[in-house]
Image (cartoon, rainbow, N blue to C red):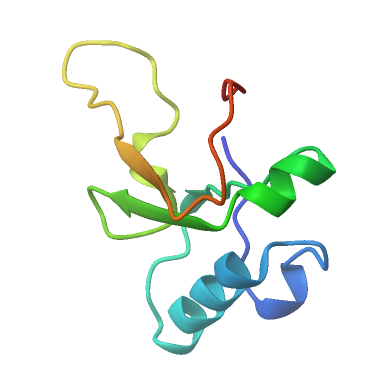
Length: 99
């Protein structure tokens, strides 16, 4: 089972700013925090420089997988979560593949 962030002081200091702000807004609005959060950043210096804009969309409107999908046992009735990531406005083309 995932361990969820419950308060601002639980958030890692190195968490991406946009994700951190999203979670803080959910805390302030008393919205569900039972989410397996997703962020996308470049791994290398070149990745970080070239990855300009990343947009997340999920079936639940959050930056991640809602906790009710976990544990996923692939049994009858279990639903798989869906998160789409759109890379746009990147500074140049690359032959790198995402992991």
